[in-house]
Length: 173
View 1 (spheres, rainbow, N blue to C red):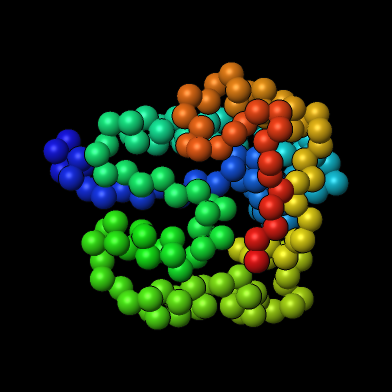
View 2: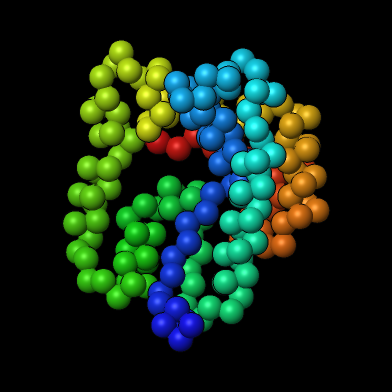
């Protein structure tokens, strides 16, 4: 256990609502789960994915309370300042990586760079890159159910507000 406490741990988290919606679209576009269709929200097992997210947040939230070197990074913060956030992460890990290398890495792994490698005729069925522009489309009743469970079961929110006024549905480039 001593070795674990000496590790510098970075945990990247995303709004649970955005994560669930992303999973719905990935699974709904995948040929591996033909029973899940994007025109039928009920065909997706929301509660199973929500169980996993709640367990993840509560487990890592607990670790963050006792681990002396645990950095929580929120996805929207990473997307807002990619180079700065990556630099903070590499500094936290005591890695001396020049900014130009981080910028090049981000360029090579950008959504556009990944999309350029996928043939256009596979865009609709490729689950590795999201091409959808619409975000925040979970029905109000589903959102209410998810927020209710989060308010009851989530011990560690990792900096997200899961009240009824929770903001989500951001479009990231």
